[in-house]
Image (cartoon, rainbow, N blue to C red; front, top):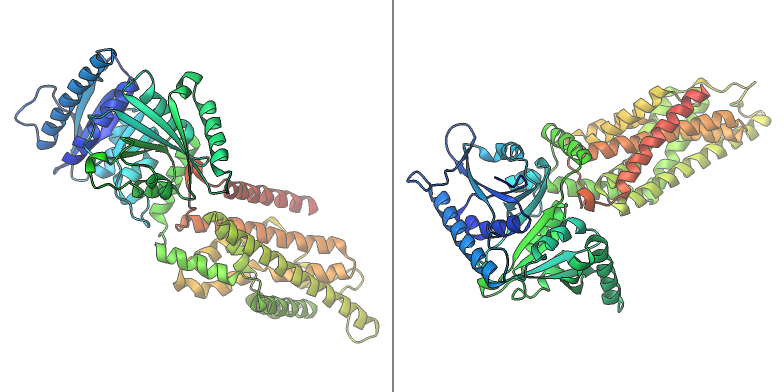
Amino acid sequence: MENSVTTVLIVSQPDEVRALVPWAQTIAQRSDHKLVIILPQRRKGECRLSAVSDEPSDNDGELVAICRDVIREVSLDVCEKSQSVALDSDADCQVELYQLTGEDWSSEIAEHVTRLNPSLLLVPAPLMARDQFDADHWQTAMLKDIECEVMLIQDDSKAYEREIRLAVILHDDFDNDVVLEHAARLTSAHATTSATAVYVEPNIGDLAVSVGMKQLNGLLRRHLSRYEEMAFGRRVIVSGHLTDAVKQLDPADYDLVLTGVSSLQILRRFFAARPSSDDPSVIPALAAVRPAQSFGNRIMNRIGSMVQSVVPQLVREERVDLVSRIQTSSQWDFDFIFLVSLSALIACLGLAENSNAVIVGAMLVAPLMTPIAGVGLGVAHANSFLTRVALRTALRGFATALLIGVLFGICVRLTASIGWLHPLLIDGAVPLEMEKRTHPQFYDLLIALASGIAAAYAMSRPNLFSALPGVAIAAALVPPIVTSGITLAYGDFTRGGGALLLFVTNMVTIILGTSVVFRAVGIRSQKEGPTAAKWPRHSLLLLVVLSIAVTVLMELLR
C-alpha cells in the first residue's frame, strides 16, 4: 500500500455494513487514507485478527460477501461521479478487509486496532441509555481505549447515492477544530458536497441570531483557510439544548449531520436528537468526532479505568440520593446554626476544663463535616450550585464557632478578673488540650486527608453511616476554631494563628480527599474531556497548592 495513513472501520452487522461502508470509503478517499475494514464475528477460540483474501472464496461468510458487494458498488459509483464532475478518475480509495474472530472479541478489539496505528477510527453509534457509562458498549468504551480520532456514525437512510449535503453543528463548548477539519476534507475540491456550518446560540433575546452569526464567522476564520471558509454556508439556530437544535434541521436538506464532542452525555443527546421523517430515505446520517487524546488524557483515562475496576461504582439512584442528601444537609438553616453553636460551646467548656471526653462530645455534635464534604462533592460533580451553597455554609459555620470562641474567652477573662473563674491564660501558659491545637504538624494534614477520604466513602455507602461519628472525631474541626477564638480574646495572636492554620489545613485537605473519593466511586461531571467545565480542575489544583503551602508554613512555624 502506498498510503501509510489509515482509516479503520469496525462493523459487525449486515445493516451496519450497508450503511457505513460507503461513508467510510468516502471519508477515507477524501482524506487520502487507505481504508481498513474489520468485521468482528464471535467464534470459539482465542481472539485473532486475520486478513481476508482479495479474491472471493467459498469460505467467505455472509458479512464478508455483503462487504465485498458494497465496496464494489461504491467504487463504481465513485468512478461515475468523478468522470461526471471532471475529477481524478483514480479517486477511489484502497480497501483492506480483516476478520476479527473470538469468543469475546469486544474486550480485545482496542488492542488489535491499536496495532494498525490508525489516524481515524469509525464505529457505529450504539443506542445509549441515559444512565449508561463508557463500558456499557464496546463502541463507547473505545472512546477511552483508543488514542486516535474516533468518529461514531449512525445511518438508517441507505441513501448514499445522492449528492452529499453536509451540516456541521458548532458550539463554543464543542471540539470545533477537529470537526471543521473533517468537514473541510469532505468539501475541498469536491463539487458533489455542499456544506452548511450551523452554530447553536443560546436564547439571549433579540440579539441571539446576530451574536451567533458573529461567533460562527469567528470560528470559521480561526479554523479554516480563506478558500475553505468560502465553501461553507452559514446558519444560526437559537436553542438552549443540542437536541432541540438538531431537530430544527429539515431532514430532507442534509445527508450527513456532523459535530465534534468528547462528552459521552452530549453524544447521547446528539444521537437521540435524530430528525424524524415518514420517508426513511431522507433521514440524514449523524456523526460525532472525538479528537485524538493527548498523552496526559491517556494516562488519566488509564488511571480512571483502573480505579473504576477496583472501587465499587454508585448506580444512578445512589448518586442522585447522595447529591440530594448532602445538598439538603449543607443548607444554612436553624438546625445547622443550632448544632454548630452548641458544638462550639461544648468545645469551649471542654478546653477550659482540659477534658478530652467533653471535646470529643463537641466533635460528635459538630455539623461542619457535611458542608465541607459538600464542597468536595460539588467539585467532583462540577456542580457549581452545590459548591457555592456548601462553601458558604461551611464559612458561616466557621465564623459562628470563632465568634462563640472569642465571646467565651472574653467572658472568662471578665469573670476571672472578679474571681469567679480561673483564667485560661496564666503566665503565658494555656490548658494542654488548647496547647495541642495551636501547633499544627504534618501529621495533622495526613489525619485530615484520611478523614476526608473516610467521610466521603462512608457518605456514599448507606450501610457505612455508623462510621461517620468516628470520622467526625478524627477530623476535629470545631475545637481548633474555638481555640483560636479563645486565644485571640486573650490577645495571643501566635497561638490563635496556629489554631486557625490547623483548621485551614483540615478544611483544605478534607475537601481534596472527598473530591477524589467521590470521583472514584462514580460521581461524574456532566461533561468530560475538553468540553468539561474548567473550574473543577482549577479548584483541585488550587487545593493541592494550598495543601503544599500549609505544609511549608507548618514546617516554618515549628
